[in-house]
Structure formats: C-alpha cells, structure tokens
Length: 141
Image (tube, rainbow, N blue to C red; front, side, top):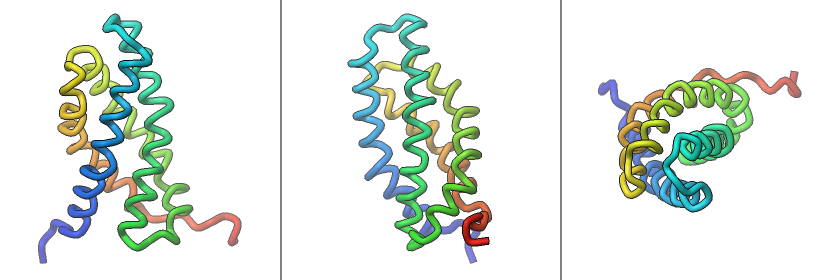
C-alpha cells in the first residue's frame, strides 16, 4: 500500500482550488481596497485583520468542508473542539511571518500565488491537525 492517501490529497486539491484560492483572491483584494498603501503600518493592519479576524474564521470553514467531503459530518463538533485551537496556533507560527513578507514585498496580483506556495506546507500541517484523535463531547458524558 502507498503511504500517500490519494483520496485525502484529492480532497485537499479540490478544497484548494474550489474554496481556498477563490476566497483568498477576494479577501486579498478586499484588504487592499480597505487598507490602501504599503507603509509598515498598512502592512501591520492587513496582517492583524488577516491573522486575527480572517484566519480564525476561515480555518473552521476549511475543517467543516473537509469533514463533509470525507463523509464525516457528524464528527464536525468534535473535530472543531479538538483541532481548531492547535490549528490557529500553528497557523500563526507559519502565516504571520509569511504574510509579513507577502503583504510587504509581493505585488497584489501575485499574493494568492505566494500564499498557495506557503499553503503547500500549511496544508500538511492542517491535514495533521484536522485528523487528530477527536475529543469526546463533554455534554454526552
């Protein structure tokens, strides 16, 4: 048997192309319309909105979408309970430095491409985080 889960790779590819890339395209355009300029202050403002507003909301969107594609919709509450906080923390460790580079040095029309390159590493992290052993629902104990 192959150490690569081809079905899981397919689901991540589908989510990347059908959810992540289009949403990031719209999000980055919004950020640049909402916060115009390229000063350090403007970059920090974009980074704060991206990492402390968008990311904590989008990560569960991704996890829910992945659960549905895996046929595991019933595990969504447990998956979010188990994986959301570690995923957001891991997100900040990778994406805060990456987005500083992205927002400061990468032209807007290449920012989604840059994010997709960094996202290759992030997808491996998120795949691991979203497949962790699920915690039982404390209400059912």
